[in-house]
Length: 260
Ligand SMILES: [Zn+2]
Ligand SMILES: [Zn+2]
Image 1 (cartoon, helix red, strand yellow):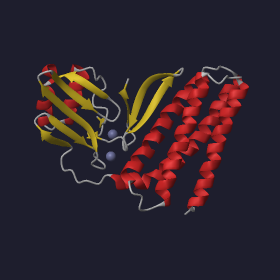
Image 2 (cartoon, rainbow, N blue to C red):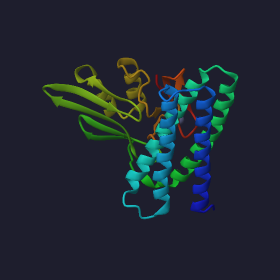
Image 3 (spheres, rainbow, N blue to C red):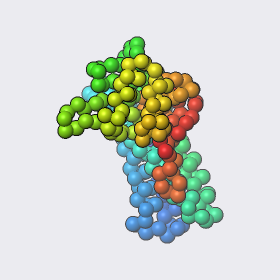
């Protein structure tokens, strides 16, 4: 196994390569400081460096005081980097020059190496994170509060929570990427479906009866299972620099649009 120092050197080299591609693109297209591409590319660089800084502290001490928090923050920065990378690439494709294509390939190569290095290093920490033995995927906390747990690790992936105050009659949904508030009066039926323990019925209800057109974002209909944000991998798609949609890929490799 490679020593920490070797890994560190390898990642530092990749980060330097990433910076070099950004600088070359800037010079080639004579982009000025305020161009959107430069700002997004700098964000990408910042997210990658931040993820690696956090990971290094995790890797260097087995007794880190806040392993859970540090693991989650590292994961968030990797996710932010993935999102920003997709946007930066999508913007670069609009430059429509022969060199743009070469630069997107170079960026792709260096970023995929970085991503796999970061993800692989984080994986043992992620696996340690949640290991609760939840018998039911659907956990009833109260008649108006339910949690849905990941089929792999038991982490909370989704919550449904109703507010019964007179001045605020709402139903809150929080999934792996979507957060939305419904009008409780119209959607009280969700709780009856959660009570029947059928994920598919709850998913279909949301799809056809609410503004959450892609249903439960943490749900894979083919597996009929819920996955947390660590186990349902998200791929964000940009079109000419603008958000298009998000795909989810479950641990079985099944892919679907989870937000459009
Ligand atoms: Zn999970
Ligand atoms: Zn699946």
